[in-house]
Picture 1 (cartoon, rainbow, N blue to C red):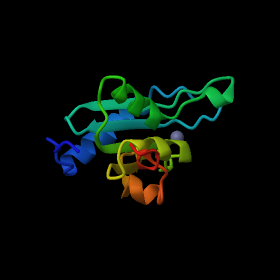
Picture 2: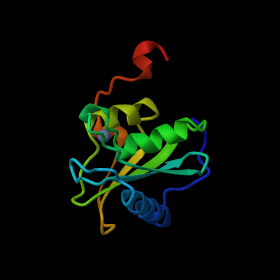
Picture 3: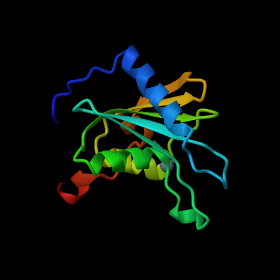
Picture 4: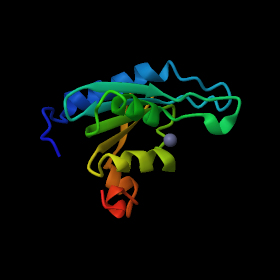
Length: 140
Ligand SMILES: [Zn+2]
């Protein structure tokens, strides 16, 4: 793994949570009304945000975390330091998002905050998804 240029200090944690709160305002959640914002910090020091995007055909909806991760991957970023996730009540990433996070590194720090910016939980992807099936199982 590339050595990160960025340190996950308190100022960076605060910035990621604020970026996630900003992204949350763009959430398209007319069905669940559950608005989610995410902000991802890459090892190279870039920030990517995402919001949940729902659809009348429910299963085609996508979570904020995966929007942010896919935006980053689509621009060549595959190593992440941390991802902040903001919801009204401090909800935790769903199983699908945990699996996608695990694909790109079990050490990524997940910051779970509420819409007022309170950091409620902090853990690694490995702690969120113990025993994850990953690239190593396919010899990658
Ligand atoms: Zn999800």
